[in-house]
Amino acid sequence: FADRDGFIWLNGKLVPWRDANIHVLTHGLHYASSVFEGERVYEGEIFKLEEHTDRLIESARILGFTPEQTAEEINEASRQTVLANKIVDGYVRPVAWRGSEMMGVSAQNNRINLAIAAWVWPSYFSPEARMKGIRLKLSNWKRPSPETIPTKSKAAGLYMICTLSKHQAEAEGFDDALMLDYRGRIAEATGANIFFVKGGELHTPTPDCFLDGITRRTVIDLAKARGINVIERAIMPEEMADFEECFLTGTAAEVTPVSSIDKYQFTPGDICAQLIKDYDSCVRRKIAA
Ligand code: PMP
Image (cartoon, rainbow, N blue to C red; front, side, top):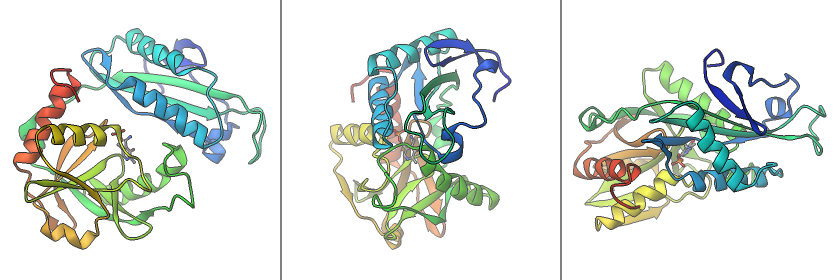
């Protein structure tokens, strides 16, 4: 991904894509003092930009550091990056990390760096293809307790569990992995939240040890606007036998139906179809969220 044309915003200015490099003794690389965001551009505008930027700053605050830029400066830099790369439908990746001034676990005075990259990534929106659903495998890796690691931060370190889980699932021919939490409850997929449907109602795990996704909250609002009851609660894996539909939500995943998780089968139906449609209208600002 490094050898491309384009521009990346790095510590205050747009630099050519290939020149957006960092030193190998970067604290963020060695000790995972790094937080990031994933945003989508639809028709030239970053969807829920302000919420993503606020979450980036909050993720950093939880890890004990503050970007040099204000939220408004980060928003403006994000828009500039999208414009500079002439993106209509795409993805934006801001990342903030502790720099290379000191080496060791302690890095009190290291510079806080911020980069924003953006690339073309159309939303391959074909509801028919989506409705086939993807296949998930239950991961052996568990989401940790909030007493073990700050689970509310979208911190790079937490993604080690996701990569392990996703690689394991992919090696066995699955599309993605579903992780349980440290208590054995259903948590989330490796880059998306999960919902189930039973008797016309939505059930989704309470986000008490994983990300309460911006897409998750948007979809909850869209469902409620349709008069669909949404129940946030602890969900045990055995309950999957009784669920009719299942879908993932995330900036990248949007609303993606799931056809199976290990031995549990689901049939993407009316509620998946409705929410795919509503989410698409919402990101294209045809309906409010
Ligand atoms: N969980 C994880 C682990 C994620 O990486 C993401 C994507 N950021 C989500 C959930 C969904 O979050 P959002 O809807 O804000 O993209």
